[in-house]
Amino acid sequence: MRAAEFVSETVSTGLGGGSAGNSGGAIVGGPTTYEQEHQYTKHHGRGQRRTLASTYESAGEQTITLNQLYGDNKPDSHDAIWDYGTMIWDTPFKIQTINPRMLDMQLCDQYGVEHIEELFDRMQPEQHEIVDNYINDPNLSNKIIVVDDGHIVDGNHRAIAAALTKRPIKFVDISEEEEI
Image (cartoon, rainbow, N blue to C red):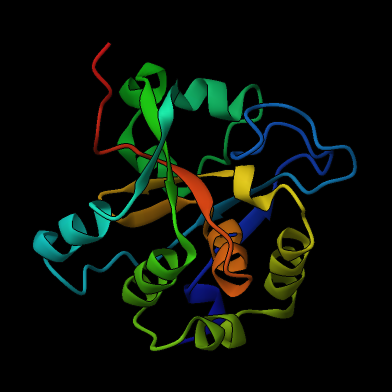
């Protein structure tokens, strides 16, 4: 399998604003990126994913909608997040935090690798640069990735960077609607 089949990412504006994980605010000079994972396969049933989900820590009672998360800089039309339709974009989702050990396990499970470094080694040089930029971002732990019942839908490069540097990262699970 080629590295491009594992994680792909596009730059929509290059101006650094509104990417998922910065809550719609601009990061001056930073990348505006959106991840898409092309080969969604479940290696394990829902039972294991539920076990992983129970290890997440709550980030308080904070919620965010996808419209708030992305602001005016929506992902490109071919990104995996659009596979879920637009009805969920105004739904508030609880902001949670996943510890680096569990994130590493989740990524290895999702991509069928034994070690996160193996996934990084399979990536294209352009993808290495994107991950390296996130590794050097002191605010990486405050970025938000989007998951669906343990499967990363958007934020793969941020998640890989967090796992490689053993930092927690925030996420919203679009399989869990927040009751308000």
